[in-house]
Image (cartoon, rainbow, N blue to C red; front, side, top):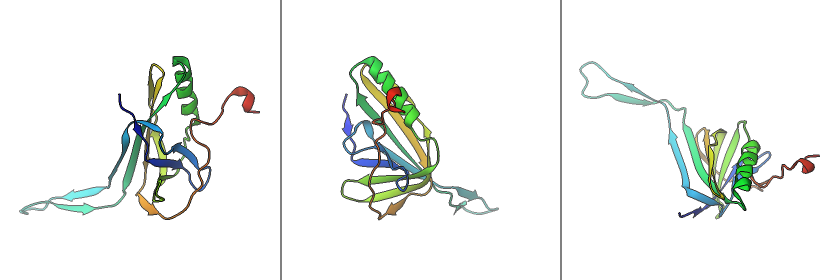
Length: 159
């Protein structure tokens, strides 16, 4: 089993709550994955040699990562999975992808589409699948907020 260190910071709502979903050097089961597509209309013509493709926009970007946490016990691993699922934001906001050298990209109007989770003994496997609009470069400077998974949801601390 080989884990990868994250080379990027993923921040949900960088202009608001600035929740860090993934930070630099967090353990990952596999490298970050990013995919994009757009609507394309394909049109055929009578007696034409080929078709014509028309780009119609509606670009979509998806970003996926599988985070690993090493816990003290199987029970603590399961409790971490449940707490982290509750802490994931379920609304729409921008996602900021930041590299340590200061380069940033923004996925607007993004939402966390799914969050399957499992564990292997004390190791948790938290998959986060984010989908949003057209990705673009971002020249801003941002201060991260709280880190997902480090927010204390213990009953005595909620008062």
